[in-house]
Length: 556
Ligand code: TEU
Image (tube, rainbow, N blue to C red; front, side, top):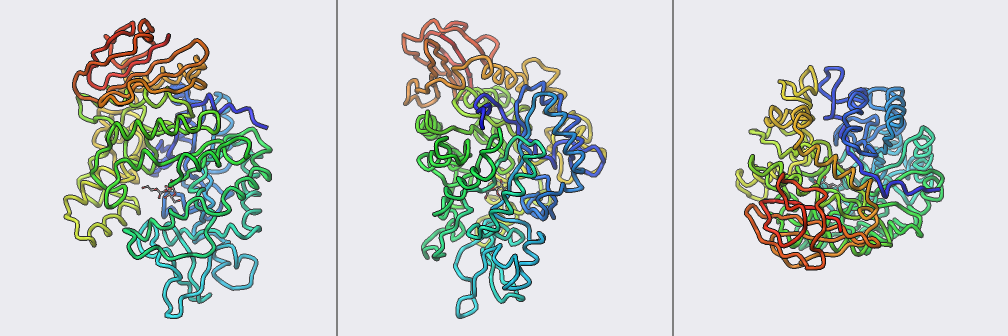
């Protein structure tokens, strides 16, 4: 059963820890989300994706789950969650949750029991290997958050695999009992009425069973396991999950799939294969990687971005479905990374990026604060960071002999904490977020960049998003139109067209900080302006002189 309603939906990602605190604890909570539902409704979004709110020691901010069926009391209770779901549904907003089943927390009861003995019910719930003859780790793999991907446990005399922190042991999907437990747990949440799942690192659940070493010359042995993305049985497992659970509900699913190319994405999202509805790919996130991966000061090239987005638009058309995103809780702020976050151009370039993404085919995701044009956070000291990935990268770059300045710059540009500072509801001292001490510092921008200011300014980034969402709802060409580039090699301007029947939607976005002339094909002349990010944009399409970061949508 599937109404495919998600093809017309816009998703808003809420990072609960940093959204709205109602208790003074300094951490956001479920009642805070309930309180702010009218704000989300005003923006016009259809679906909320909640980052993990389950019981967790919060070593990796909830991606280390110790009880899949319990709500972390820091966020509230199950009854608060039910209220949130009911109130959201009343407003016509659906809720999808995070499904983190590549690994659990080391505090999960399954893991505790698994550690104890080699012959109990949970012995094979995780990936245990004997030490090599010299006592060392089974492979040379590094973990995402530093050190080896293997941890020794005395009681079993064995190592367990953890692709992320050592507190996040990987589940053994080869074991059918593990899969059954997961399906049962998913069923509980669906029966409660949730509308879908975002599936954390789902492309990693199936491991190659030969456990090969990473080649000696691999720059990072830690990247090696990502090469093991899309393992041998991943599609079999997801199809099984579809048969056992997903296919029984009218829901949406989006898989997080690092290192998955557009051909592989079709395997995940082709409806005929009955796996997932869509995936998050990372190809545009990789455009500014350097020797230390994400932590670099390389700037993306617009032509590369256009190539990547176009490849995914074309490849998945009619065969799968795209997720459209600029940012999330693992990425820096979109306007800093892909736009221009100077005072002069922050708002106009944030609107440009929104325009470019929201008129494409797929389901757009807005990460909280993106609708305010929030930029990266200027933290003065390393002490202000909270994220384990940031600390791991700091150690790694230091050990590699990188100068402190370069490390600080990379962290400022790419730390996940850029996206995790408390949501600025207003310009007051505590940003309307909490009455207590926030778990992570506020951005110094909050006094000027905040929701109250945005709502009071009819030209704000917020209202631009609101209009883009309304356009998706109003015009089928936005969800269904055929995608085609205009002036495919222009060095400053990303232009494309969407066609459905006699309708043509023309989208023109300048990435330049100065004026540029743009020649439009003659047959598009006369199209009428639907939306732009300047007050005095040309009402009728002809040859254009584009202002810095100008973004235009025309309909013919
Ligand atoms: O992220 C998976 C993932 O690919 C990360 O390694 C990502 O590349 C990194 O955060 C980018 O800097 C997911 C979650 O979104 C993330 O928050 C978790 O830490 C991770 O899985 C482990 O569950």
